[in-house]
Length: 135
Image (cartoon, rainbow, N blue to C red; front, side):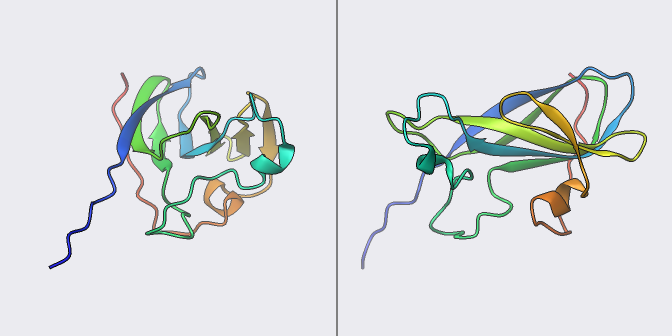
């Protein structure tokens, strides 16, 4: 009988701050590569971490928040690990109370996007929407 070592994944906790006094909707928090310390820009062509058990990785390393209240909200997601120069950060796509869609990029820039947050990432329902409590 062959024994296999299960892949041990770490969990990470991310605090999301909604500075508005209104709810944000359909928030997709995605783990992406942090460009700081990367000498070769070609290393950033595949921003999302991959898992050998889920080669597409479309829903992995993301958190889906159905309604994000004003204030601080904590979410949890898998952490893929890192290497000596591999770092991760987050970006968020969301819908505001007026129905517009926005992307907060890894560097902090916020700009309007034309697609729903799921469609922006090429995802579709069903997504595992969470409705966390305000912290």
